[in-house]
Length: 119
Image (cartoon, rainbow, N blue to C red; front, side, top):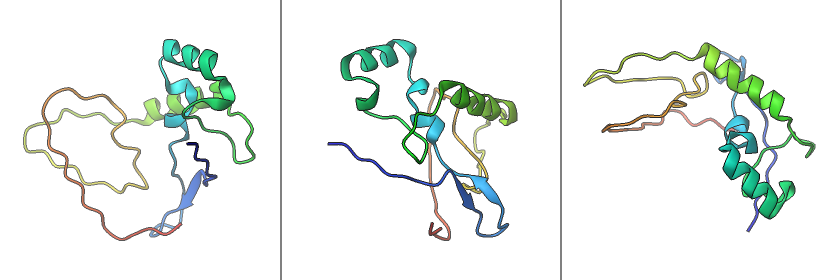
């Protein structure tokens, strides 16, 4: 089975009315895979038949260099702090690209959604 959809790369924040980057193109782009897995998948299936990948809205290929630039910006503006037992984090999901770092250890994740956002 193959699914495809075209989504906007930005959204309008419901309160601030700002345009915000609101997608995960970089996460699902083939360049986010480990090099060995990426090369194997391309060899086995071909670039156009990968199990996941992202493209521009017109279907053209997003160059790895652009995804690298996006990943670099995420790294540049990321905020990392030392979690302590009992810490709670509340954030605006449209304004924060949260949870991009790996984590080891025990934790409890509780999610509460507020007002729905209709695209």
